[in-house]
Image (cartoon, rainbow, N blue to C red; front, top):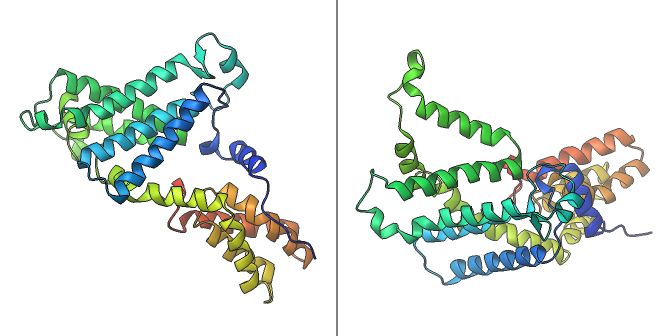
Length: 311
């Protein structure tokens, strides 16, 4: 009896990039690839430091996290999902496979995020009355944040944010119950950028304080083979019962979902074992694939590591 193992990580990554829009990373070459690796290592070290013994001000902690993440998005995600990687590499307006404009956007978003921790003490003297540079950096951050979200997650979320922004600015022009006093651009920047109720709010705080560490744990656990251990555990528990392969599919996908937030990675890794096993015991091919697809999609909501759809 042969033992089936998870697919090669390189093949798995290629399949994820093909099927999952959130995994379509830009093909980087040195020196850009080295810069990205250093930034990722620095981000991980920073979070190990803050989780263990580092005590930072709330805005500083969240700001540094945002600066790293948003800057990395502009380096690893192309402006267009179907952009020609060969064209980007050969362009004279690119460095390391990354267009110069994306380098500038990465620097701009990092500066706009870190501006708040830098002037935090002075903000107490101008609460509700943002200055020119407050509005300028806040505008840069809002625009680049929407663009980073579009690149990494598609259009739906940015369109919702743009819709509510328009509603906040154009409130007096709406009819009936939708009408409100409205807000100026500087007032909106003050709320979204200079307070803890906007960009630096609870959502970013939870990600920077808790979620990132679980995601990092999941990646490390997958790399050392814990995913295969979960598959073997599911097989030993459910494999001997009637309909065992299908039960292994559901149970194994739930366990693997604890480490991976990607339904594609879940389906490929667990399905490489369970789908052939289900077919061998008499399940139809379509049904076997459907069981694994449903189980892998449900694995996205298995904590601690969850996919974007869970949120």
